[in-house]
Amino acid sequence: MSKLIELIIARLKVTRFFTSLLPLLFLLGVSSTAVATPASSQVNWSSELIKITEVSPTLYLVKSYKSVQLYQDKPAQTFDSNSFIYVDNSDAYLIDTPWSESDMPDLMRWLEMNKLQLMGTIVTHYHQDRAGGLGYLDKLGYATYASEMTNQLLVNDKQPTSNHSFSGDRFELLKGKIEAFYPGSGHSMDNLVIWLPEEKVIVGGCLLKDNKVNNLGWTGDADLANWYHSINKVKAEFPHVEFIFPGHGEGAKGQSILDHSLSVTKGVASFE
Image (cartoon, rainbow, N blue to C red; front, side, top):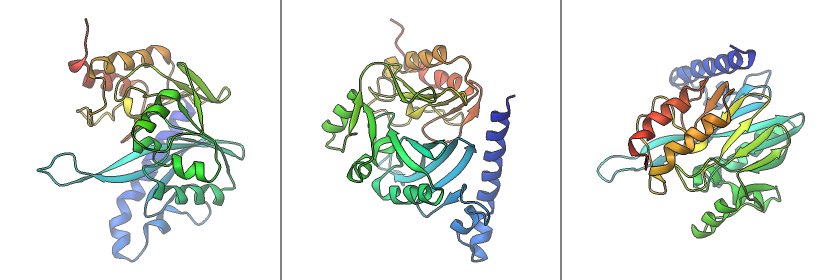
C-alpha cells in the first residue's frame, strides 16, 4: 500500500472519529465549527453548510448537503455530495462545486483563510450537485470549465454555464496534474471522471457509486444501457488507480468502487 493511500485512510478515520463526537459536544455547548477547526490549523474545517477535510497535502474533500424527497410517500432524505479542492503551491482548483450557490461563500472563506487563490473550476456533469456554484463563480470573475455538452444541457435547464468549454474526450485543467476523461454516457449523457495522475486518484462524479450503495439512485437523465460500458472504459483507462471517490458517499482504495459500480449497473446494461 502506497504512502498516499495510507494517508488517505488515516485522514478519513480521524474525520469519522471527530464526527462521532459531535452529538456529545453539542450537548456540552461546543459548536461543530469549533470541533472541525483545530487551534493550530485551518485545514480541516466545517461550517453549517459544508465540511472540508484534508485527504492528502494536495487534495481536500468538500462535503455539501441537500434534503431530497425521492418518493412522494416517503420523507425527504439528506444526501451528501463530494467536491474537491486540488492545491498546487498557492493555487487552488475546484473539481465540482458544492450543491448550491449558498454553499460557495464558505468554500471561498476557507481558501482565503489558507491563502489559496482559486485558478479554475471544472464540473463533471450538469446536475446541480456538480454545477450549482457556477453562477456564483462567474459573477466573481473566476474561470470555470465544462464540456460543450455539459454547457448545452445547462442552457436547456436554464442554469448558469461555465465561462470556458472544451470538446473531445480529454481535457487538462492543470497540465500533468488534473485531467478530465469522458468515457461515454451513464448517470447522465455528459458525465466525466477526473484523473489525478500524481496521486493516482480518480474523482468519479456520479458515474461511480459508493461501495455501500446498491441502487442506481436518480436515473431520470441516465443512459441505463450504456452506463456499465462507460465504467468499463474508465477501468481500462486507469489500471493503476490507487484510490477512487464517487460523487456521493465514501471513497475506497484500489478498484473496488469500479467493480461495485459495474455490478450495480450490469443488470440494466445492453449487450447487443
